[in-house]
Amino acid sequence: MLKAISGICLGMMAVAGCSSGEASTPAPAAASKPPSTSADAARLRAALLPVPEGMHISYGPELGAFGSLKSTQQGLAAVRQARLERPECAGAAQLDVAKPDIAKAPAAVIAFAADRGSITQAVVSLPSAAFPAPLPKQCASYSADVGGAKVAYKTRTLPMPVKGDQSRAYLTTATGGEKNDHAQIGSVMIRRGSLIMSMLVVGRQVKPDGLYDLAKLADQNLSRVTR
Image (cartoon, rainbow, N blue to C red; front, side, top):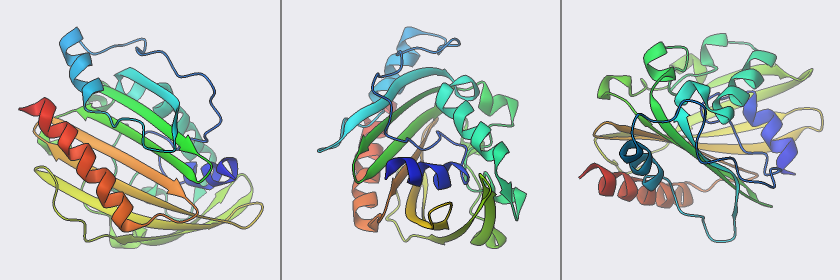
């Protein structure tokens, strides 16, 4: 089930990828280009979510330059393989890894999985100006060819209570693929100080209230490490 969901999810977003839940061995705690100091690394790692109840770590924690992280590269590769009706929507409302300052920024990523779905979270050290713009209107509904099958994406902005200094949340419904799969992708972006948190929650059904609870916990972690 997770493999099918991750296929149509990865055709949509590059940031942090979407965990397939298939990894059995956590990734090493450091990438080839780690944060500049051990203090930076400890701060980023401390901002990550703890393992949610009923889930397990499927990847990470991995630390390094955001663009060099294995999970980021996997997401970018999947987007390159997909042909989007509106190419500008591939990374809309997400951190733009094509920008050198974002690609080189210190980051940490972790992914959790269970039979019901997955959670992928990235925390990146960036200036406030890097916080993504709202989702463009034309990206609220579009289609893509993912692995030779058509997938339709419909996204709505969620009225999530404000978190941190800036925050946004979206819920995307993806339908199609080889087996006419159906998945929902909840996405949250929060900035607190110089840290920007990106989170993707993938499953057959993603409930906004559950997404808000995860966002609240993520923001609490950000608050603790930015004091």
